[in-house]
Amino acid sequence: MLPLFLPYASLIISAVTHLTAAAAGKTIFLLAGQSNMSGRGGVMNLTWDGYIPPESSSNPAVLRLSANLKWELAGEPLHRDIDVAKVCGVGPGMAFANSLLRKDSSIGVVGLVPCAIGGTNISQWVRGGELYKQLVRRADAAVGGGGSIRGLLWYQGESDTLNVEDAEAYGSRLRRFFVNVRADLHLPLLPIIQVALASESGPYTEMVRKVQLRMKMMNLRTVDAMGLRVQEPERLHLTTPSQVSLGRMLTNAFLQLSLPSN
Image (cartoon, rainbow, N blue to C red; front, side):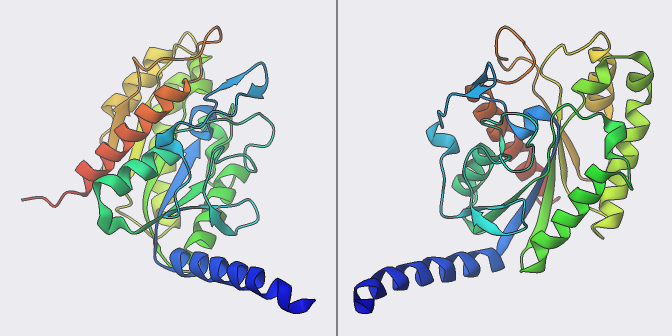
């Protein structure tokens, strides 16, 4: 009976070989922050509706690093085994990767490294903290099998709008986080694309948004998500179409940042 299984074994071996080869030459992006980066598109009443728009569909040229540090075919929800305390839905990562591949075929294979955790304050991303250590550990694992980290996609800040102390300290804490990540990954010019908040989360939202929009650092771009639709009635998380739009915005910002200067 063994010969009957040989064709299936060959297919499995071929698929694994293809995945291994693709992972070796990947262009890697770290996805970090809180719930809107993790993805809550399509999540209502603690249930994800399961809808994946075409722009966020799986693509053989897009891989994700799983929670157990293995490369696999990427698919929504990208953070399903990372942000495990909440229900995950559609985020901006897949739309970003697919849009990037359409606009720049030289990218080859995109490797996404989900690291975002919903409800986290910037103080929880301090160097030495668990979230920070997990980000660095996953980044190191991502390049271990080949490829290079080309950018950090960062969407966070809603939790820092709830009290004035956090809002006032947000700028210095965020800048320190970016500086430390670059230093610990040995990538002093790592491109960083951050998202300015889309929702009026707390009474100090505008304080945090001003910090985000005015921050100036080498190889840092900020995309403003304000105006993208958020889900009703909670008005905190981006809708699935808004996540697709944000993915395109992140792509455009990255490509502009990557353009050679004259």
